[in-house]
Image (cartoon, chains in turn green, yellow):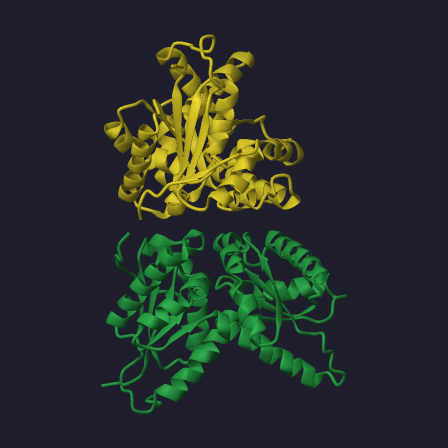
Length: 292
Length: 292
C-alpha cells in the first residue's frame, strides 16, 4: 500500500487548476483530489459567513476523500475563510495569499542583492486581482507583514477574457495595458513604485506571457518589474510542507499516483474549460452535490 | 386612495433596470417595485429547477409588496422559469423573450412594406445574448413561432464590459466588432442572413449606440440591419397590458407614484451600478433576505 500524500485542492471554480498545474510539476508523486464548487460561484459577491460555510463544506468533502493537505486555491476563500478553515480542519490548510506575499518578499531580497546600490524605496508591490480580493485587502495585509507596501488593482475583465479563451489576443493585451497604466498612476499617487507585479487570481497565470509582453512593449521606460503568481508560490509552499511532513515514498510505491476531479455543477463545462487551466486534458469529472 | 397599478420587476441583478428605464418613459404613472436577487446571481450557471425556485421566491416577495403585474426582466429566468412562474402567479407574468421576438417580427413586416421588392429570404434574426440564454435556445423557439429564423450568438464579454463601465470604449467597440463578424459568418453558414439584431440581454441596451456605430464603421457593405432590444419591447408589452387591465387613474391620483428597490446582496453596489442602468440616481435600496 502506497503512503504517498493525498493533496486536496479546492476552488470555487476551475481557476485553482493553475495551482494544481504548478503542483503536478513540483510534487508529481502525490495523489490529487480537486473540488470545484462551480454551482455556488462566484464567491466574490457573497458574505464572509457564507463563503466560510461553503469552504468548510468543501474541506469536509475533501477530507472524506482522503485529503491529508487542504490547498485553498481560491483567492476569495483564502482572504475571507482561512481562519474558519484552520479552526475546523484536522489537516494542514494552505491558502494562496501568504505564499504570494512571501514570494514577493523573496523576489525583492534577490533584486536588492543583485543591485549593488540598494534602492531602499523599492518596497512596492502591484497586486492584480478580482474586485472581491482587492476589497478584502488581504494581499495588502500579507505584504505589510513582509515589510512590503502593496497597491491592489481590481481587474474585473481579465477573468471573463481568460474564460473566453482570449489568452493571446490583441483585446486582452490592450485591456492589460490599460489596467497596468491605471495601476501605475494610482500607485504612484500613493508613492508606491512597484518592482514586482503579483498575479493574485488563479485565472491570471494563463496571462503571464501576455503581461511580460505588455511590459516589454508598453512600459519599457518604467523601472524593471518582475511578474510573480500566487499559484506557483503556493505550489512551492506545498512542496516544502510535503517534504517536511511526508517521507518520500516514490521509490517504494508500486501504483501510479491518482487524480480525481469533482465539480458541484456541470461536469461537461468543468472538463472543457478546466483542461485549459490544467494545461492537459481532464479525462473524467464526477458531480457532487454539497447543498444550496 | 390611488388605484394606479403597481408593477413588480424582477431580475437576478441590476440589468433589469434597463427594462424599468424603458417602462418609466412609457408608463410613468405606475408604482414600481424592483427586486434584484443579487446574492444568488448569476442564474446562468444554475439548473432549471433552482432558477424556477429562486424566481418563484421573488414573485412571492413582489406580490407581498403589492405587485399587480410581474415583469421577469431577466433573460435566463424568462427562458427557464416562465412556465413555473405562470403556474404559481396570481398576477399576470411577462417575460422578456416573447416581446423581443414579436418586435423582431414587427420590424420585419415594416421593412418588407417599405421595400417594394419583397425579399422573401429576409427572415433572419441575429440574437446576441449570454451563453446561458443561447444554450436555452428560447429566442430561437420564440422567433420560429413568428416565422423567423434566429441565429443565437453568445457574447460573454459584453456583460463584464458594461459592468466595468466601458460603455463607449475602443475595447468594447473592438469586442462588439469581433462578435458581430463571427456571428455573421456563422449565421451565413446556416443560410441565415440577419436583417435584425436583437439585443437579448438586459445589459445590452447600454451598448445600443455602440452597436449602431460598429455597424456603420465596419459592416457598411452588409445589408442594412436594424437593432432592437428586448428591454424596450417588453416595456411596450407592459404598456399595452396596463392599458387593457387598469383604467387610467392619472387624472384622479393625488399622490406621486412610488419607486421601491430591493436587493438580496450589497445595497451599496446595487445603488452604484444600478443608477447607470436606470439612467438616473437610485436614492435608496432596501436589503431583503430570500434564503440560500
